[in-house]
Image (cartoon, rainbow, N blue to C red; front, top):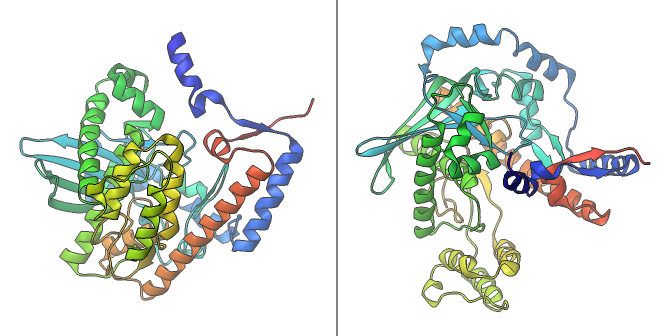
Length: 437
């Protein structure tokens, strides 16, 4: 590593190392977590029967995948990779991409969790109880047992895995769906990238040599192609009125966000229009005109901030345009002014009303079945073309548990600040307990 590389790495979470605390602080944090878990009904331990069931499903993995090959599309030879935070514990989504003469083909491969977790299992019942994975800074409460989620359900590199693939053929001119195909597959990821590594790969294609077992895999070329596609999808989304509250997101995050949005949208359009079945849709109501006016006036009054006159008619475009030119010191205040007037998004069995912030007529979640109940259920609906009898109750359950998880996270971060810790640093770098001298 050159001196320049070392200096660059020092500015990343990986380079800085974990936040150090003493044993007394560690006990203090543990007591606070226990208090919050009791308050919000969050179970930190899995029942024995759930763990036993999960462990049993990790046995004879290779034999089971081999037995599944004849029933699935074999995509093992396709260049495929994952991109996640450095501290990610499971990898439930991977991508592949190809440019053809008149179209792009984008494959989003999602871990086939419902092959292992279905309504007849104790793990399913536990997932319904939990609703989602809860992410606190440096502490995670999983929806599914890690012994399953971090092994056979995780799309680790150079291992065959069962996936649910969303294959999207996109028009080169307008990036619209020419066709959507959703099917069971067998894949083998070529690389597990962190966001930092993906950024480095875009700057230095030769860095792929350090990330791959097979030097012939065209990872750098594919990463550059998917970045060009994701950048176009992102700009198109903004032009069409999708709210983008984080204009400075880096290329690696943009790739994953846009590819997952494209896949989620494709799946729920397929369910609604091609199959006509109920699903767990993500519905985000819009603020009233008065609430939007209140937010825009608050933003306009911030020092150094000006909303372009041409954008006032569409509040989402007004916020996007303002965020791009506003001083960095005002970004949090602009985002907060918007969030204050935004109704909560919720899960419903009917997409009526659409997703206001994204400006999508129909939207739902599919790409994170390891950590969200909604995605797990939508996988089951796609696979069986059948809807759970208690779908409405499941929608309410997922919405409620998400609200509890967000409030728990908010209160824990507030507590970290009160005891002198930076929640962002803890979240990005983790914690390490050190002995007092």
